[in-house]
Image (cartoon, rainbow, N blue to C red; front, side, top):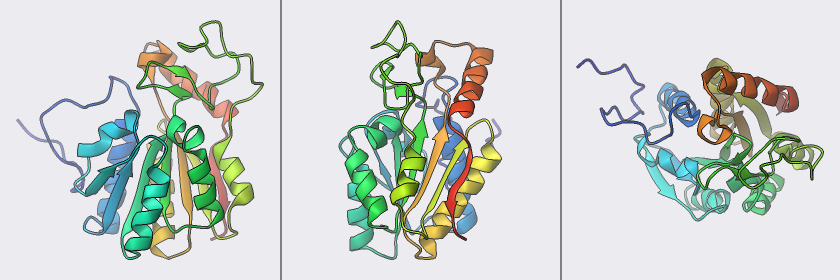
Length: 241
């Protein structure tokens, strides 16, 4: 069997993906692997992953990887960077790990302008535990913990916009979507280069598919992400450079 031409950083394997069919994590991780290969930082990269769907990324990238307790990924990444300033530290998490239990760590790392890169995947719910309501759940969206729709909040939590208000002037903050992998890869590359240049905190939120918990077919999944993009605007929110 002919193996796909993966980036060198991606672990080529015949075993199936750990993620559910249609999940956006695999797209994001392939893009991230390409960035790491292009920047030639495989031997310097430390990949910190959270509990949740993001923990299934543990064997996708051929780099040093460690997993933390839920919501502690940013704090652990900061510790790694302070202990080894020459390493390239990537913190990878979902919207639950970053905007719910891990929000305090994320905000203070941003406020202190810690020289790490955070990549956060937003699919509007806590997906690994069954699709419960999350800070990013859209107004009116049905979840397993709000089957009649979410009406207790008029709008979801806007993480990049909130961080941009507290961030150092030189911070890099952006939002992309898996529906445009070229843009997502470009933003991740700029964020990591930002860290390599010693400019401080960098953050990329990526809107992602979750057909299993959205309970959508292929077309409905794509359509729902388009609705997400109307609520969560894509682009570079803070990029002084």
